Length: 441
Image (tube, rainbow, N blue to C red; front, top):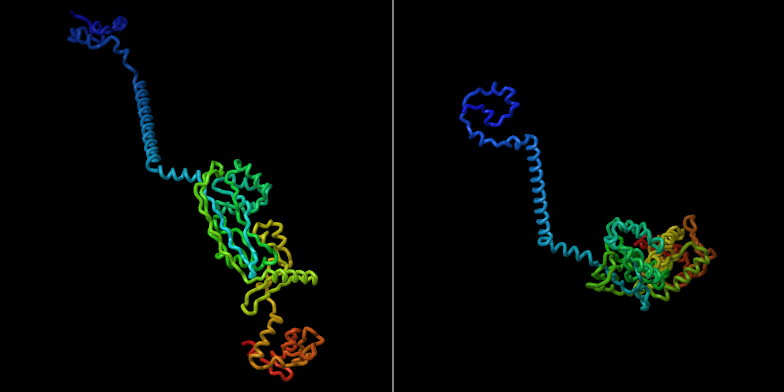
């Protein structure tokens, strides 16, 4: 019954030879078969090293973290999808509708201007215009404008400034001929944001005769949408009266902005018509004669104003040299505009109301009326004009140095005699005259 413990646990002969008896004394043990049954023969084979266990734990930890990240991402995606579908659906529906529809301004026609004899002086004519929607062309806007500038007359620098200012609808050209319209229509698919529309152009029937009086129109520099306003003359003074109310149309468009269906349309309201005091035939004749005299006398410029003495209404107001009001309204080229600005005769200058001139012979009417009212003279008061008067060593000449001889008031007005009105104005040669105080009052 006496055995070594090595026999019980199956120690090899090599270990026995090594001297296992030196470590385990020979004595009886109670382990018996229970120890033998408790320890499997391949027990030691199943034991793994400590480093292998740590690597296994790290792998499990990483896999768990990855699953957690995927789970959180999935939950966030589901939450976002629910928000888009349920909470923000109305917003994105309206945004999608805005992307497939476009609002276009329908410019209102300005009121017609008539003369006192009911002749048309200014009206509107339909024309084709080219419009650029900057919200559709994006970064291509400048390239599109540069490309078109080689084919049609476009102020590229001016358009660039409008783009930078934030304007969404820019008129590139306002009077396209039919050939250019047909050519551009074939290119619309490749040019996003471009559209052709009908544009009412202001048309002056006598563009040079009434240029200074009626003025001209142009696009508003402030409005973000195209709007025609009066720039000078009657067109500017009565702009609120002549301007109408623009309408708008809502159209379905494709990805390039090309319209294919009108969803709704609100028509524009035209402006009110205006009748002025100007007489057409008198104004035409005044301009014709003024131009003839200025050219023949090689004068720099001239002006004619005719008024109704009963009402004060202006029957004619012409200034020469003049300019073409139609070119200014339709869009004048830079070179033509520069030529007008550099002209030493200053054709844009309205000499009838802007220049400062001595009153001249027009003041004779005032002097005559005042002298008659104050009983200084009568219409029959006569003086002898020898061509000048002398006061304190100073000589004041008549325009006719030879003099007009015997003249009364009627004759003095007829020949515009300076000496007669010197006399009744200040007093001379026995005639009391009005005097400085009465003339100034």
